[in-house]
Length: 587
Ligand code: HC1
Image (cartoon, rainbow, N blue to C red; front, side, top):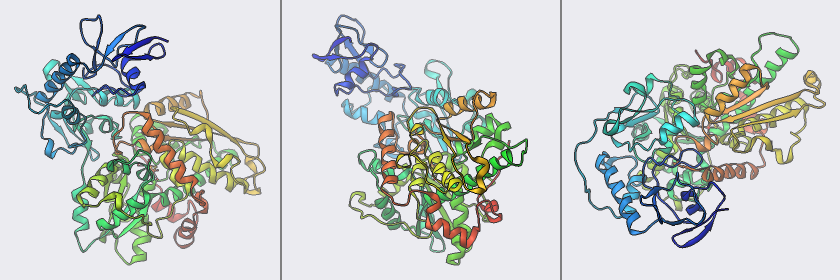
């Protein structure tokens, strides 16, 4: 192990460790605007400069490896002045409308300028002409704020494998965006928002729709109903400086009620409904293939709750769309249920209701506006807000989040099982489905410790598990001894690898879960911004804690789910379900 001295402190690190990581390992922070743990280390921003004794020029610590005997200075006068100059030059080019920027007080450049003591701009002059892009429902780009850090380019190309963003032009006139300076809606952008989640400044953000929601809340003629996604409860607290992974379900519910929502519902209710529908859809496909001998049954079945993934399949693998479950996402099932079943219960017409959802995802904004999502006769979900937008609304409402008491969601659409909680984590939809499907087939509980399917719970990009069916009930006897093979991918780059293997026949499964974002929805593009896996892990743990804290941990045992089938849908895959809960996707 090389031993070096960082600011006179002896540090031993494994071979190949960068100076940036070595400093972090002993609690020394070196600022950076372009580094992304495990994803990008390119020394583009030059903010992480350090001095090495005996070397003339300062070096970028994110791309320089520690060598035995190195003497490194991370914060001496020379380093501080160089860093300051780098940031002053970035500020000279940056569109500095900080007071009105949605990243005000949440901007890495602003924070760094403050930390470096920059109080006035040293350099002013010509600014490159760069434009704005409002072409998509999910995202807004303002290139005048871009600092060319390349984080968005790397995440879009190397992690998501979408390749919608590139550096173009040269030198001062370089811009980052879709090829030939087109807008995002002309390229294969799936609006996952991972670019917005890693952008250090306000160059890419979610489309802000908070004003639309305030207008609805102020309209006495409207009943304004809100649903909250599983992943919000593990991350919203970060908007109020809570430790990542603090569960804030109760405070969030109270905040929403105090802001004026007429009813607060849980997307987890329709996550449970999804398991009922999607599980039965899978069993029906298996029956057609194994009993009826139908030749063209599309297997494996792919999950369909993540809208970026759906768009990905439509763009890149349209021939495999029959494999995608016909189930709408839980967000869209809730939208349809609110404007039909719930509307009937409260004696309202669908057009009298404004249905708002709080999602960790920018693609959900796009999903809500898809033409297929109007089965109530009006748009089923009217407005989608991200976790970050909800955080801003709570601040605008003047609520002291910390002192809010815990509230309970409303009935009948506010109850979710532990299986629905874990939808937020990569592997969670699959585990939830197996908890129910195994029990439907055998009458017995999934035979895994604490109901967890451990092989699919990690942050590995592609994961597999197998469950052998033993002693099924008479109805499912054709599955006796069948090993059900499942796979899980998160992040679209991993999804592409998995789909390619399935397509080529190299791998074969019965059921496959894909979530668009790294880590699943807990790492969604609309969540409080993160640049490393530590926060993802904490959110994932918080979600499993929520699941394990419940006695209701299986979707098919949710009493309100049983009730809605009894009162409204009759049975999974029935006629009304077909109309309201399922859809089809187009090439
Ligand atoms: Fe998700 Fe889903 S898990 S897609 O990540 O299936 O966004 O949280 O709400 O719809 O339930 C998102 C989260 C979310 C849906 C559910």
